[in-house]
Length: 82
Image (tube, rainbow, N blue to C red; front, side):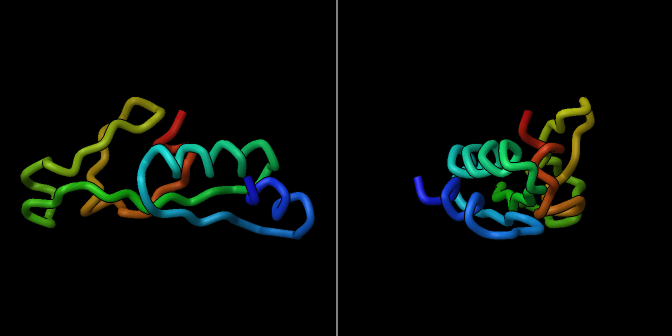
C-alpha cells in the first residue's frame, strides 16, 4: 500500500483517519509500526446525541465504555483498537 511508503519518506507528526472501521484498524496498525500517533474518527449510530441512550457506546482497550457522541467522535487509535 501507499501509506507505509509515505510514512517512510516523509516526516509526520500524526496520522488522522476516518472511514470503515476495518480500514482505520489497518491505518492505525501501520502508523504504530512507524512510531507515529494515530487519531481515528468513529462512526456510530447516535440516537440522542447526549450519551443517555448508549446506542453509540464503544469498549476501549483499557476496559472502559465510552460514548462516541459525547466522548468522541475522535479518539487516539490505541484507546479503541488493540
